[in-house]
Length: 137
Image (tube, rainbow, N blue to C red):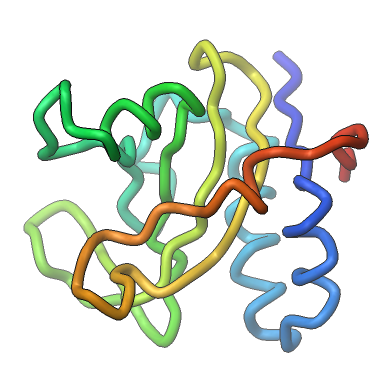
């Protein structure tokens, strides 16, 4: 089965400016996805979950996260911390869209787990909307 990763244009611009270790962490994630997809999260070093987790269905952030099929991966920056018996978490998350739980994911953004108010960070519309084609890697 073929698995494909694309970069949203804004993320692609920012990726080019990340330092090499950060780029490597992202590419480690994409390599595992391209080899195995997302049917078995245990293949990944960091925790993967949907971005509406823990929110009421009618919460505005849950509605928005579901609308865009937003998921996130704990990327291991600055390092992994084992907080749950089976998951490793980190301060930074890689946000991606996983429409229809299919064979394609779209990398959207990478940011600190929480915004300045302490609320879970969700990518802004700047990252989620685009007037041009997605960039395939």
